[in-house]
Image (cartoon, rainbow, N blue to C red; front, side, top):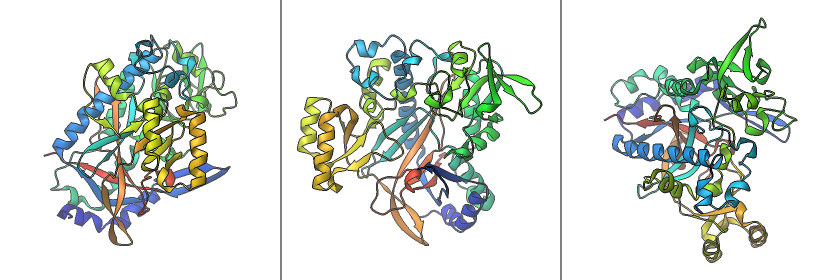
Length: 442
């Protein structure tokens, strides 16, 4: 049932979406050599989270981000968790996200996952489950940030009497995180350019944090120091790079030599301790869907604590006991390719044809490390407006955790929903939309 504040806001839905489009709040896709820009539809009915409930989530999110950072520090350092047989080495060194070049390199202040985007769903019984950790280049914070800003402009009366946490501090949290690890010099946001799917976010966060928005051509490395070249050729030292470029393309002289969007030798400057890179390179080993299975064990191993937030029930065919369970319950499970992201590589066994099942089982037998299986969580529907009518749709929540001098959780988040009535896939790359997330302040 809508509260009065929501009812007032809904009157302005079309105006809000019109302004979002005008300000360039779009999601871009570059696939099969074709660039396509599409609107990221906003639904004005907010997700509302009670104060006490969010406090519980906040504790669990901080715990998880800390454990994942300790894991990365260990994996690229002494590797104790492997030596102690907590995580099999196959799940480390065979992961596409593991970067041998990062071995022995400690980032400034020992922080790897400066910004974590952690995806959760809420079951119909009220229990929260973590679906995945995004530790490489997590995106999405800018969308609820600007949506709330525009909602305030269009409907100031909505927020006059409603007691919710103000989400406008994300830029301050991000800047605090950048400044904490800055090695001396400018802070820049490194973008691959306007054809990137999240270019709007790059430019928006650069503006809000006071950082310079740069491309690889704006930066140069000399004697392991990174410099920004301004319009008149003057060079200024750079101390922190919030990079929105994937690991392989960041430095063509250390990684993918075909990259035209990176900065030659920037990894050498990072390795020398002269610049911070947020997030650190090599984080993909920790958000591998296979490693996800072990995060509760990491929390116990590194922190000596019981997990506050729980994974969805997950099985690894790598283990014989789990493989037997998967064989017996194959049709009841959702299968995920550990190397895929953005909603790709996810398949519900119940929707497979007999031929597809046979093909999938053959691939599974050939490479059990490649897949995980999960019980299908019938997570909560949230109402959206579709053609003027309220209809239920599946929705998740991406929460943002930042590691600075202390763990920081943004009191907001990106609530994504599917536009299809029979779909569980909410990713924007799959045609989903987004909502604001209201955290009640009392």
